[in-house]
Amino acid sequence: MIDDPEKTDRLVRELEASLPLKTTLSQTLKQTLTKQSPDLEIPDSCHMTRIFYMGEEGGIVCGLDIGGPETKTPYIVSITHLTFNKRMPLFRQIDAYQRHRIKKLKQQNGRNY
Image 1: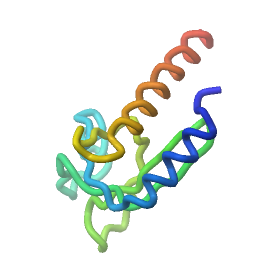
Image 2: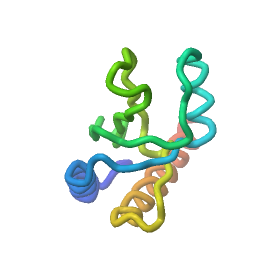
Image 3: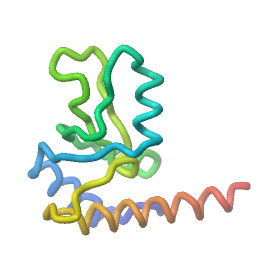
């Protein structure tokens, strides 16, 4: 099992109650979004406006406000590709989730090869 269901449910509820949250895009994510939407300036940071749990396969994903209300493309990304201010109240829980998920995915991928 990749995610601890109880901890993940709690984190999703806490994130939903705290929306919108400011986040910073990883450089890899920013480059990917720039390739997908060359007409749009992709910022270094934006706000998470939605939270979804996509089960074991997808984990926690976030809707981002890139492009404003007129955008035709929704930006939904894994929370593991985002960074957060260390002073925000949920930082420790988010960081623990990200580290745990990345570690488990690496272990799982190592077993599959």
